[in-house]
Length: 142
Image 1 (cartoon, helix red, strand yellow):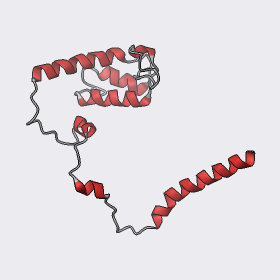
Image 2 (tube, rainbow, N blue to C red; image 1 turned 60 degrees about the horizontal axis):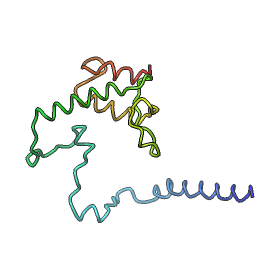
Image 3 (cartoon, rainbow, N blue to C red; image 1 turned 90 degrees about the horizontal axis):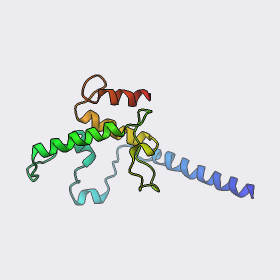
Image 4 (tube, helix red, strand yellow; image 1 turned 180 degrees about the vertical axis):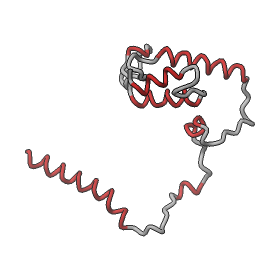
């Protein structure tokens, strides 16, 4: 029985190594472009737009600047209140989506990183801004 597991583990290792090393034997001057990417223009990326790395066409969007800024302020207040004692933020697990109390879940790196980016995107740094202390405590893990 143990030999079967060893054979299976060995096979998995060989497959993984093949995935990493076989592409290195192909010509470097050939660039593969997937046909589907040529069929239509690429959709804008929401994540890049939020970070300011990609432009966002606001011509088709009707918004009330005051409402948007009010929503941002409320969201930032909630984020600050949801910070855990260890400096991080958590979103819970996939099987506990019924938990709405942000302090009833454990901090996780992904949620903490996204919240940190949101705070940075709203003009905060480690040394200035209304939520600078929140950012600083999230990096120190205090």
